Length: 388
Ligand code: GDP
Ligand code: MN
Image (cartoon, rainbow, N blue to C red):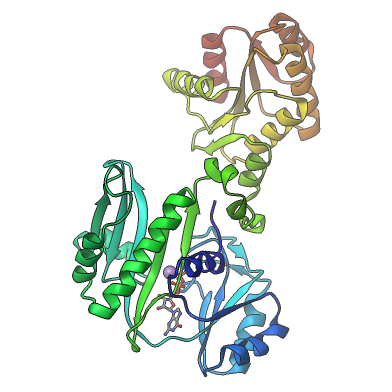
């Protein structure tokens, strides 16, 4: 799960990571008051959307008067912001963060993630922070300093490691102190809140010799959200696409792929086996979908709806093992769902388990474009054939 910049910054400041003064607004009417409270004569208006690249997409605007702040706010609020990291529709802007403008001396990068190769939390840092960090990473990777943290070591970043990194970044004594507390703060959030990625880009050095988190990005592990109520509350569904929303509402495990066969399966292992079999017979899955246990008609309908949003789907393969659920109930659910969703694509249904013959019989008799099969291999061959 992603959160907004302003939310990330709140988490930062609780861990003593320095951030610029800022005020969140949701209407232009509040803009001039915000400027007054912040003081100064330069403000930055920042669109709050779940995507980076806002600077390049016109979502981060430096303003030199209160009027300019007002104009910028009215342009941005209610618009769709398109950045190099969004799709062509962009993301809705419902909130703006207005910040006191900073005198930037240098823009650094600091981030933490789990490096799956080394199986360690890894600190990434660079003197080349800012809007082109992706380019730096791909064209001059030696400018990115990597630092693995031993999970069996001190359970934190050691002061020596912090100092070493600060040295490589060319920070003076005062900034090194600030860097240490920033890095330790990030590490604390990372480990305490089950984070996948946490990033400050840019981490700036101001002309006043201060280290400030000018931006903040945090991606949390969805599977651990149940134990972080405070974080789960930060969710903003206006920033999620319909697919993700349905999947998370119904607790489906759903991953889009680029093939043509939509898959609806109960159980992750069975879903993997189904995809393997489709590939084996020369087809390609359009998605991974585990609808989980306790499959009901409503869930089946939602799953069909989800699969139908994939533009490239030419047919659907339903593979359900009736262990706890009864196959005849699933069959009813499928028929009901086809009607509700208005499905016209060819469907192959393989049912096995409790009351499977009854279920297959029900489906076989129906007026819809359904092919029934109790043998998994035959079913896979059939759906590949139908989508060729
Ligand atoms: P992103 O493009 O979505 O990553 O948004 P950022 O929050 O990183 O802002 C993009 C860029 O705007 C930064 O890299 C800075 O160069 C610039 N910027 C943001 N705030 C200020 C500020 O207070 N003063 C100045 N001069 N530039 C800023
Ligand atoms: Mn940024």
